[in-house]
Every structure is written in C-alpha cells, then in structure tokens.
Length: 219
Image (cartoon, rainbow, N blue to C red; front, top):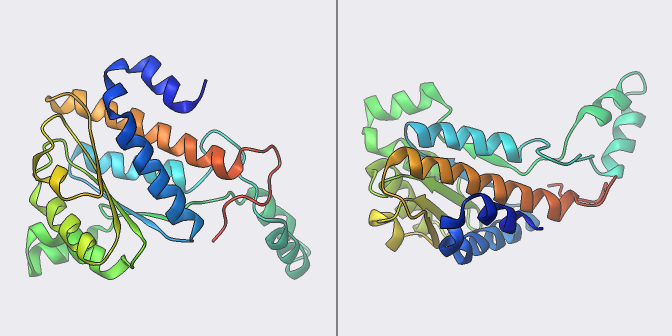
C-alpha cells in the first residue's frame, strides 16, 4: 500500500484532495530534482505546522538518508580524525526554510514596515524562479499569507496552498491548492498534518528509497 492509499485509509474524507496532493508532490519533486528550495509560512497552528514540515524534510523522517559517497570520501580525506563521524551523522536534506522562525526579522518588519508583510519580505529575499512556497491558512484569507503568495507568483515560484473547505482567496492564487473538506480550524489542521506527512514520505521514498542509497537527493 502506497502513502496516498494509507492516507485515505486513515482519512477517507481526503479522497477528493488526491489530485491536488499529487500535483503538489510532482511540483515539489521537480523543484527538488533541480536543486530548488521550499519556503513555508502560516500563522498560529499553521506556523507550528510550518516548523513541523521543515523538520520532516531537513533530516531523516522514516528512512535512512546517507550522504553521497563523494562527500563521504571528501570528509574522511580532509579530516582523518573525525571525518567519518561527520559523514555517519549527516543526513540527506531537502532545502526548506520556515518563514515563521526568525523572530528578530519578523518583528522588525512588523514594527518598521507593516505586519502583513512579514512573509512577503522573506519571499522577496529568499525566493528565486523555480523555488517553491507552501502557504498554510485554514481560512485561506490571512493577509500576510496572501501577500506572500502574490509576490511568489510574480517571482515565478511554484505555489502550494493548504487550506480548508472554502479555500478563500488562496484557491484562486496558488499553482495548486489542497482544500481539505472541513470548516473548523482543528479539523483542518489535523488533516494538513496528515497531508504533509504523506508528502514527506513520498519525497523521501523517491530519493532515498533504496536501502543504503548514497545517490539520492543532494544539492
């Protein structure tokens, strides 16, 4: 049983979201294959989800992620005393940034510029054509998130929205919008977590699925 089948087994109500989840996965797969990065943002519980998703992508989630052999050998050659330790403890990582994490920067933007620009400013600083923005908003209307999406589209980023049943403004803006069929925030966030766990598992399996694979993803 694949990861999407497992997802629907646990959350049958998400079956209608499968085409959009697949589109999001395919966009992320292509971008990571090209060495691009993912930016993630959201407010409140969705900010926590932003951090959580980064944690699943930037280190091993369900599978071992050994670093490439070429890097392993360089570390051992360059640092004979501890290079093997570095190589053994590093894990393959998909380059992903949470835009909710930088307290000093966020508060500076909110205080000096405007609170609804805290994510857009970071998209402007970090985003490059071909990168990705994944934006979480249970309502689909959070202004700071919408501003970030609008800028990301202008900068030619692949945009993924995760929201609730109504979709709000997000559904007309993002390259793909995953609208879980619920209206209450706790129900929406519960399913967002299940969706990004499935995406994490799918990406990890694609790049690191073979046991001992040292030719998986690397920038």
